[in-house]
Length: 408
Image (cartoon, rainbow, N blue to C red; front, side, top):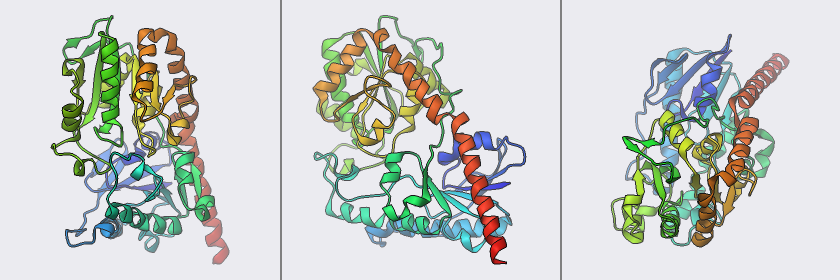
């Protein structure tokens, strides 16, 4: 069976599953992306190149769609030149990566549907302190254009969580299954790592609080985290706050509300934390991050209702005691006082109080980390997820062949 994966970035969300599928007998994995080429751990990589895209003259609301159309055409051209013969095409919805491939192949198309955008009562306006501009609300509607095309043209699709599936129009519900990308529980597990950050040795009497995000931004509550950290620091002298993430805004409109170059600078300027108590590590390789999470006495995950971060699931897999925002996507994995702790996103005092209780006696809360690990193994581990993907691919291939036989 030839599986053709398409995503602008290799390996995108498909990395965990690819690592297993590419090793299965009678399975050939091909991956189209913007840059990767050659063979990568058993995956044949083919680049596609955009010949155009959105510009400053493209309407702000249609720029996402404009770029997606150029991507779709680039993928089409790359596939045509490569002379592939896929049995299943798997792509990430919204990027325009698969919508034209129905003109090249008669095989089923499976799309990952990650998010459907809303202008109101959503991630966009969850934070009243960072209100969206009117044009941003309009853009939220337009951003669904390619997603709707994918919903219409794909054979079937999947969403990583029940909450994410619930966001999509009800008329497409029968086309969507709930399947997560998968967590490699052999990589993400608690390790007997030395208590060391770089060359700095962390004493056994110190408590370590971890925070991990793709970007240090308002969507992922970086400012809330710092406020909570300040409150903890006032009560406890033996706590170190370790931050992993890049100095950029991946989502939201933070930069239009601040005067500093980065959101981190803004938060530090406003909250005036004792920086001697913080370690900003930037981004880390997976293995180093797993080592850090293995040292964590408490992991804070602060987020608006949005796509659930891999970092939360990785932290649970590493048996971290997690304190997280009480929002719908998080509640699918954090069951209060069972797999972790929940608190109101805006309640700094309440979050700090829960954190202090954990940090005063981390051992008392170790069971939460053990239950979190068990949940990941049971519901999100590759041993559970990969067979789901194989079953889905086999099902759509069988259905496609039966359909073609019935019409010939």
